[in-house]
Length: 522
Image (cartoon, rainbow, N blue to C red; front, side):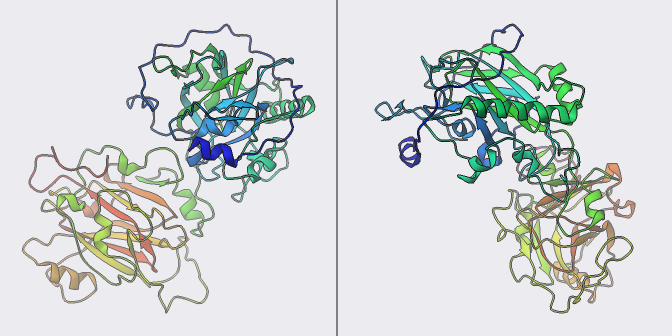
């Protein structure tokens, strides 16, 4: 609760002399009308705004610097919870507010803070195309910031610096004092009752100019303005919500720099805001690094020959959440079932068919480590482990399987499997009309199943940690040999490991195109 969070905060001595950035030169524009709110900010329009809030502390966003936090720390801006208000809650500084509130400015300048976006998930180094800004002034009825603006920048490693190898320290260390702030807790923690000295503010301003000039050495060190100076209304129920679509020319400027990694929220001159939300999508998916899969997996993170890897650390929706022209026939809600497997040490194959995302690592199919695995791992010419050791699971498709065109999309999901995902996997299909599951199971394991022919759907391909791997037939991601009626699929993992979900899509054998059919967890 707000009362408990106040009791946990500290309030050291402050310095009241502060300076800030020069006000932006653009004329203020009136905010658009916004819907009446209740306790939460209105959801973004699904037609043009992604569901990912990149300025959320739970997704990895963090405050690196704030000029002043006299009444309330800037981290409150990033909270996923609705703003709270406790009428009788006061502290040494005055009324406790759930937002970022600065003192009444008496010195030159204005207040501002810098936020590291969650655009790269857990430490991802790529930027974001921010398409919408939302500001909530809830409960700030006479002390809201009267005007604000928002600027963006992409922070890249300094000349000669090393931003590779999964090391993203440069995204934080460029701002003086950021490491100390972040060390106070997850996502950083400001100190209520604190204010920066003029020297500290000037040092932070100089750092802001330096990082901007890394991407534009001939520029003046300014950040890209994505929301010009704009008035805010008081935080009453009918005026608290402010929603701004970022202008296309501003978005293009951000995309040209490779996307935004940081935002700067400016108050003109002071006051408070309860919540900031910044909606957008990564400009480009990064290579998968540090998974132990090698260059083949890194290259596969980009769409290639119908294969796409989507790390769950990205804030955008994974492929399984996006509409597809055919239903998910493997889903248990469509009648899909687990028929058998070579090993079920840590989970049942039926878990792979749940229509909802995996809850944790226990909500999937995982095998024991092969006792005969090589003492030293060796890669073959394809970049895959040079081994024939494998485990398999057979799944029966619902709705009688696919029509004669076979599966149109396959998704292999390693959600939550970060240290025990399979090195690689393959998917095969068969048509078992008139043949029982027992015979299918025997055939899958190399036993008697002479009436069955297994044909390839997905050749052996590298997997990566905590990600969805999508294979689309129309883009060449599925084998041409698999364009035939399919009732069962066999998923083979090398040499062992775990999967969270397997999703197989196709036109059902009964026809109808899947109208009214249950569609995963959209």
